[in-house]
Picture 1 (cartoon, rainbow, N blue to C red):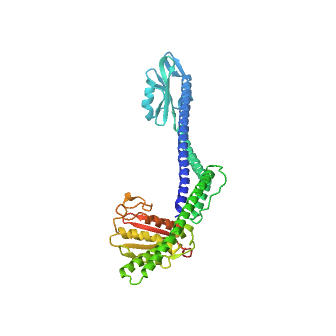
Picture 2 (picture 1 turned 90 degrees about the vertical axis):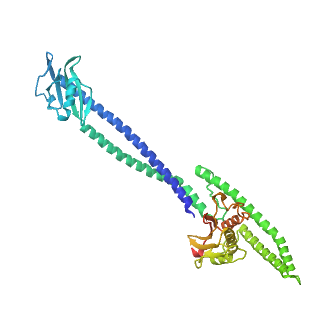
Picture 3 (picture 1 turned 30 degrees about the vertical axis):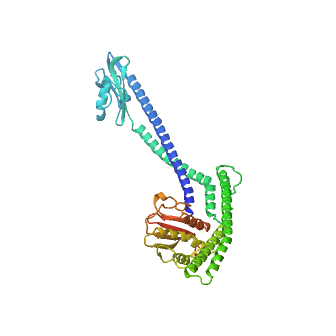
Amino acid sequence: MTDGPLRSSASVRRRLTAATAVISTIGMLALIVVVLLVAWGTTDHEMDQVLETRLAAVRDAVEMVGDRPTVSDPLDSTFDTSNWIADASGRLIAGPTVPAELRQVVARLARVGSGVVEVGAWRLDSAPLRTGDDVGRAVVAIDTGPYRSGLGRLIAASLITAGVVVAGVTLLAGLIVRRALAPVAAMTATAVSWSHERPDRRFSLGPPRDEITGLASVLDGLLDRVDRAIRAEQRLTAEVAHELRTPLTVMRGEAELGASTPRLRRTERDRFERIVAAADDMGAAMTTLLDAARGSGSSATSDVAGVIAMQASRGGLALPVRVEPVPVGLTAAAPAEVLGRALGPLIDNAARHGRTQVRIAAAQRGDRIVVTVEDDGDGVQEEVGDVFEPGVRDERSQGAGLGLALARRLARSVGGDAVLVSRTPAVFGLLVPVAPDNR
């Protein structure tokens, strides 16, 4: 019953931490893309500079004899690498053996040229041997492997760095968020530990200093207003119940006097006796309401099996009641009168709407006792809404829609609740705290 708010607080921490991880991941990926684009452009620029330097070296090593280019020193180391010279017709006249994968490209560049070309692991460029005259061309090539391998290492290092940064930022964000929300978690745990018996409890974090202490101050003010409203309602209930005691006592006395009249017919005596019984029942109900309003009986306990048996066997029910075996020694931390008055409307409702019988079962679940009341009728329609709200009822019902609301109010007065477990079939649940000796 207390895990819901704590799970919500933990969920906020997870969402904030996850959002930080996603944002940092996106940021790191964007940074990696920018770095790689810059590195790629820089690498291309460096390779183009190397190509230009080698073209200039090839030009310097060439001599012109008339309109024909020649190499003054055939053993020049310039032509030991991937540098070639072609005459005006595009025929290679100097340079190493052209690799098979570059033959077509080198031949085309030797004839007409076409700027920087990249083929496989090679990057090539060409330029005229003499500016303005078509006497031949120089073609150079470099292996891009060393340059691209550097990019590969940069990518791997960037990904590793990004992973470490994202993990570190996520961990740090989780710690910061946990520390920032620690007061909220403490407030949640404190509020969950409060019971209906301590309406005076407050967070009391002092004057507002930040958002969290401001929230605590607002909640304290709200709790003050709720406390005043609850106390006003309790006073009204107590005053109404007290004022009804006198006329009820008069009614009961008159009924007893009428029942004791000599030579009274049996049917009339039965009527007076039913009035006396109804007056006793109303008196017990008012006593229960007074106890609930005053908060008395908080330490009282009751045998669940006995209360169920008493409510199931009372007269006036429209259907028979089948009680499933109740665990031995199941004791509720609530007075028997309150527990019976809370269970009664659930049984009455099931008896009115069922077809053949009402089924009651009880079991302990953690620190709560759950008593379920099931009928085999048409169930609770969706359009009915919250059946525990005063005045809410099925259009086919003859009741006023107050019984289930009273059941919930009495159950909550002892720290329990009344809930709708299932609409089809209709299953209502009464939850009450377990007596301390049974926990």
